[in-house]
Length: 459
Figure (cartoon, rainbow, N blue to C red):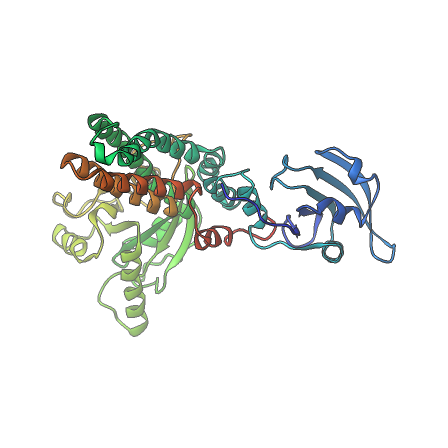
């Protein structure tokens, strides 16, 4: 675990900017108590135990009262950062908050950088790197599912999984390294058959974590979902039905939608970014052509395509041609047979080669919309319920675990062809290295800057 080399004291506003009833300023570092005590008039902070709350006044350098405040004291290491921490709760006036910050900066603190409090928590062993990321996810969570993922990770879910994998491998790695020390005596301390079994076990655990990336990405980022189809197929009506409000303009005149209309839909905690696109046909003017070109671009970028067609007017051959023209993987396409309350002009052929699934709806009346929402949800989760203990790894975790998986395969192959022990040991060392990247036992300044730079000031 890296050591905290910071010797300075930092301060920042930890509540949102803007006027409010209360604002809180956090101070952390070796001089936190002295810094706060120099502007606070009340009980002596030096005599207070940790986790104390006291009432008092803040005075400026000329002895004038700035505000009446509550001051909360946390003594190291029993604090968020692992350092001495003081939090000052004052009235939420922008003037008061800025004046108080300026006072603290003049009395020994400096402005905290983005994510610096959480970075110090990691440096001091209060959090591992995956938990630090969970703090940012928790702040950004907009749905119950996103909140659940962040809480599970903050409680150490990913850390515990990685710790278990590393523990399983370390004993065998030490035996392999021991063999290298006795290479001239040609002895084996590590049972090769048991090592192969262990590698298979670790591989299964890594694969399970990798499989959770799709869920984690969907929960954190939302699912880009494009509504496409011919003019007057009912795309805008379907968007309104999914949202339960009149968000898009609906008209019987073909080509009404010239540009994309984007909205967000929360289905059981999964956020879908819905994009209603211009009807796909031969353009009648330059503006419509630009809208259609944008429709195809959105289709190519989409995780899910809802291809809407009017089953009361479009024949089977035209439908197949439309589907063939889409530049999208069939696994991403849900075919929506709209206007199911009207007679069907022609039953479509078997469509397994073109789409993932088919849903019949009457967007104008709302029939079938509930079923379509469930189909969207099941498509993301692979028809499994959102598990309360799901980990949902992020892209950084996936990259590290993918690299670890590749090195596992290399070690497995080396064992099977009886490769030199030092080459097998090298692959196992790399597995441990990449697993350490997930928890932060192995890190670089570039990775840390990328993670903590995404935090807000004050966290």
